[in-house]
Structures are given as C-alpha cells and as structure tokens.
Length: 143
Image 1 (cartoon, rainbow, N blue to C red):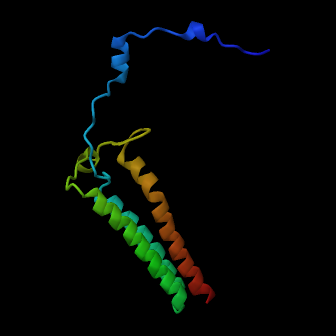
Image 2: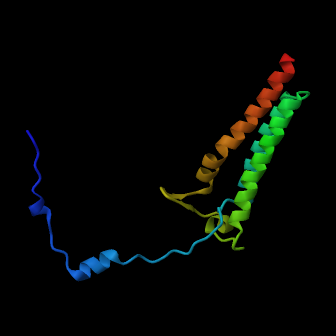
Image 3: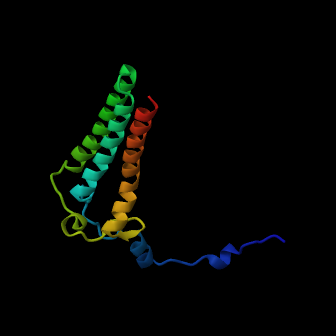
C-alpha cells in the first residue's frame, strides 16, 4: 500500500505578523573568547601531553631520528596550545562564570559541572601520559 500525503490539507495561510515574528532574529548573546576551563585543567592537560612525549623521548634515547620525531611532535603540541591561547586572548577579555565561580559550563547538550568537564576533557591526556610512561618502562625492561 502506498502512502500519499494530502499537501493541500497541511497548508496554512500565514499572516504577515506571523511571518515577521518567524523572520526576526532572537536576542544576540554576548560573544566571549574564553575556553572557560580553569587553569588546573589546562595544567593537567599539558602535563599529560608532556609526560607522553617525555616517555617517548626516554624510550627512544640514543636514536637520533626518533628523538627528532619526538621533538617535532613537541613543537606541534606547543603550536596547537599556543595558537589556541593566542586566539582566545585576541580581544583581551577573560569572562565566563565557569572559570570565575566553578559554576556550570554551558555546552551544546546542556550545562555540565566541573567534575563532568574534567572527566571528559582530561581522560585522553591523562591516559596518554600513562601510555608514555608505560612505553618508557617497557623499553627500559626490554633493552
């Protein structure tokens, strides 16, 4: 059986007032350039990546090519975080209730508290740090 839709029954005449209400934009929210993370989250994140790269450097000690690759990777990580820091501070404003009061971070899916934000943001850098240390320990045991 084929479904056919009666479009004529779905049509409704819209008045100019209704059309104007639909076309008018809502109130504009103030833009801010802060990532709104507290400094300790950024410190742990950078520490995780530094531990990972340090573990790789320790595991490949004595290998010039591997050390060069780790150094280049370190420069990429520094460029990534440095560019984000520069772009976040272009206008010099540092606002955000999450940073100031430890309130809720407004996300697309709804507000998140500090524990949820820390868990989601720091899981990868912390695990990468453990992975780097593990590689260094395994390399020290094997060689």
